[in-house]
Image 1: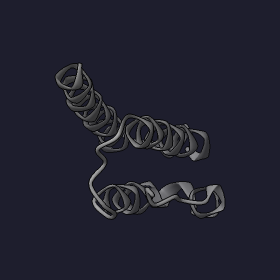
Image 2: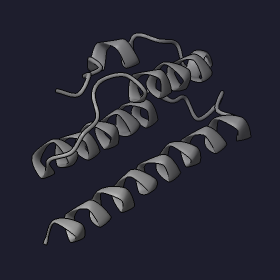
Image 3: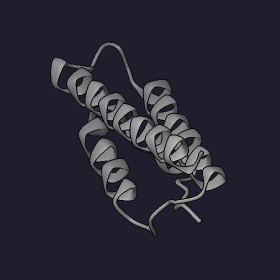
Length: 94
């Protein structure tokens, strides 16, 4: 099963610690076993998207800078790469 990050772990961090939260989330992504079946892959994508949304919800617009936005974009890019990889896996299974 994919590692889950509790909502409280993200929400409890101060907004100025966004870099740390993003680093933590990136580290979570690299943990766990490979995801091969469709159900696990879909769960992975949902989990990553939920974490992304939690980070956005916890951000303070007044203290967010360009680097923070760049990191958010990188998270979306990483998610898109995984989605494309899973999509290819699903086509290969047909």
